[in-house]
Image (tube, rainbow, N blue to C red):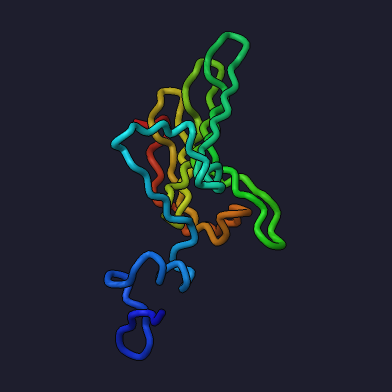
Length: 155
């Protein structure tokens, strides 16, 4: 089987078949074909052994008075080669005893930036800082600078 190519042996991502893209390791998952004529139960489908890779986990903690204390959403990354398994942060929020969010970390999926926001007790933003994430597995990041600082007291 010959791979369809464009200028100087480059693979054409639009015209190439699924099998060609799997050989070129562009697609790393298996192709699954299903027939809906007789019904389909997704709970019986175990065709994707790496399904757990995409799932998000959320941890929640509460203060003694029942108000929110800490929320953290992350994705579990499996060990890969010599790299150990890790938690890829998606969002983390810290709340004071009255339930007001005081710190919010947010790392958008598919984006290399982490944002950290601090809030006053009146829920007005105190500051927002932006970080460039160099390694999603360890969440090693470097400060890009202050994006914004608001007035004292959040007014």
